[in-house]
Length: 158
Image (tube, rainbow, N blue to C red; front, side, top):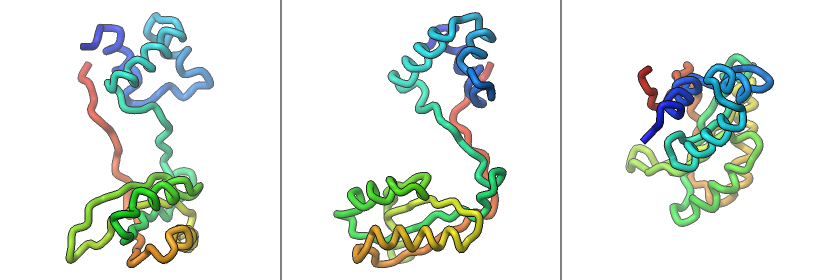
């Protein structure tokens, strides 16, 4: 259960942290708390699984990365976790995960998102991923974004 202060904190942060050099201090002032209390409460909410994460969600298009490609790979299922960890550590990969195949139409089981300024940049990064995956790659493709979808999770009503 959430107490009233936790609920107010979630409501104040669910659309994002204040864009200031000291966001926890701004929240503390808004909510009548100390900055330390804000940080402890957020950490507790994270630890309890009430909130999933606190992180940056950049708009890649606005910062010049307009060629965004989900690289998809058909690799052996028994190696997908090991290979995914290697790919996920690459600087050009923003997220990487295992997904089920849907045979016979969809053989891909490893997904890795790459952002670039041009499609040629994304293709170059896909080639680097292919080099890491080596002979494990049986098939590959790149699916390019055509629009931005608003990414939001569950929202509390005020």
